[in-house]
Image (cartoon, rainbow, N blue to C red):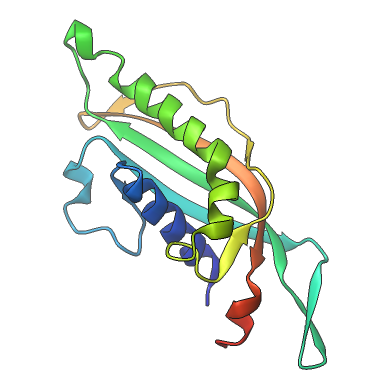
Length: 156
């Protein structure tokens, strides 16, 4: 099980369950760029934290640092009452990320082999809005620690 796509897919599934259109490189249909608003999820796993789990007498690293990038995309809203669409979605996604770690402990549908073991740190302050190709977007980044669930080892 490759950790990066598994975490990206887990976040995507959880966001989708919460009513946010979300995509990853694994599940994106050819026309996903036309969907607005949407969130694009990308995970990068870093170094091990040093925590190990004994499996059949061998110690395996099971806990890693990771970063999560969420590209929030909306359609330009030049109508006064819709101008806050992008800011509202960014605020909603940031708020949701505050509880994601806790949610992964019990969500074995979206996170069957991994869980996020501590609250995510918001590592971006990107509220800058990029407008190109008829879309408004910004990238939110978070960092955290992911651990392989004990039951994942029996499935390898």
